[in-house]
Image (cartoon, rainbow, N blue to C red; front, side):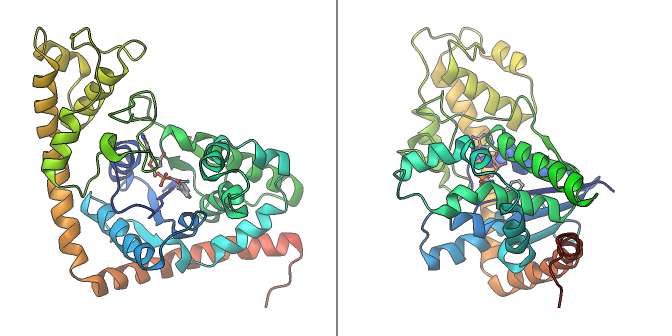
Length: 331
Ligand code: TYM
């Protein structure tokens, strides 16, 4: 079976609709046909300061949300990044073949470092994409299902894999990103030209899986639209309405056209009310199942440990080859 690898940071109290649509739903659909690795990337999360107790809790909660959304831990390898030391070890080696200029061109680093203050951003934040390359390459992944914001990082991963292979001999599979056109970028409900993100200035435009349904409905009813009053998809001139239509279509399995037709001549309030129902119907079972799973953290930890063993044996094999190629003595 071809291999897929993907991951999310446990850096928020809940995954959001962008994570769900851009990544998680894709993963669920792919896990049967691929040898799938889904990682909770806690080493990535610490590139900006985290509260330790919260990070631990959110790491379990993220794993629980994967399962609750439909990742089957018996079928897929669902594990925590820090449980497999090879991620940090390969990242170090890859650091040594990455150009400073090359790393400096990563737009997500530029955005994030501006937000944290250029001089205050950690070196870890700077080398973050190289750790991500290590994640992917350790498992010889063919495909990396992600949202649009991760495209440049997967491109860097490809460059590093090709460079390594040509300098040191065939070692890594060169992975391809899988970014679905319609769902690659879900926008903030308050600022519909910016991507929905946990680091937005306010949470008013952020739909969180674990939010109370009343909160979710309220955020949708207050979503920014426009003044012309027509329910029609047009990303350029009607970004707010277009985002609502995209979300509606993806979650209901309908086409945008059929939704436009249903709401022809009706107001935004009607569309929002119907959308709030679709979103809360999607989130409610996931939230309930997540909370259920979190009542037994010991069981969750057992499951993650088992997956870590599996991941570790694959990752270690790749790392051994890398060490041999570099002339790094192995014990
Ligand atoms: P993270 O945790 O920021 O996001 C997890 C996934 O959600 C997608 N996503 C979105 N998709 C559509 N619209 C949005 N508004 C939106 N917001 C987030 C992201 O594209 C991502 O797929 N660097 C990664 C984590 C990572 C990783 C990896 C991913 C670490 N190692 C290896 C793939 C393979 C990140 O920070 O994602």
